[in-house]
Length: 217
Image 1 (cartoon, rainbow, N blue to C red):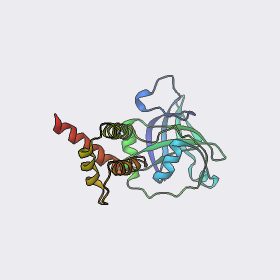
Image 2: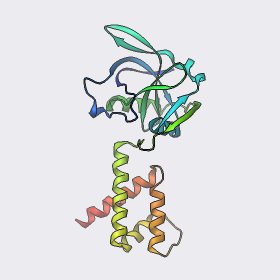
Image 3: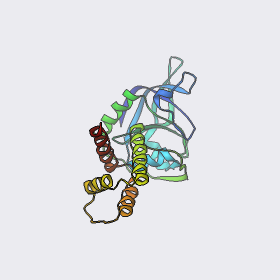
């Protein structure tokens, strides 16, 4: 089992997790001495961030009593806790004996970076789980990704309202080889791609649009 050591967690039961810059001394902060790290799929991470889930009980023995925290100058063991990570996001969980996620926590920025580096060297573990409830309003994107996606939505809306045909043609040709004639069809294809989960398309389109704005100045 791979561990990370001496980190701070901010446990919450709320659907919306607090980013590190929102942490307060009155929050449920816990100084963790050591906690196991397991790499998971992007799909599972998305479900953890946007849904209420229950992890299969067969997973629990793998992490039982392997997390230690500091409590009044003593070491306290947590029954079921783990950090689950991909290569772009890490999330700490505390579970009950049935596999329900009782608490979640983001990590401090520098501590998350260390976990992500460790995660890159790990094999993805296939963990069985069940989605109990979808939280449609909860975003799983990082702040940077959410900023980029919001920017793209606004820019495509401007193109649509102002009928910027030359700009749309330029963007369309950069990403698609299929011949489409009408302004509406090209716009629909771009919007459909934009509505998908964040991926490399969004980042490249964002960079292209930002570059075009710089050239105008």
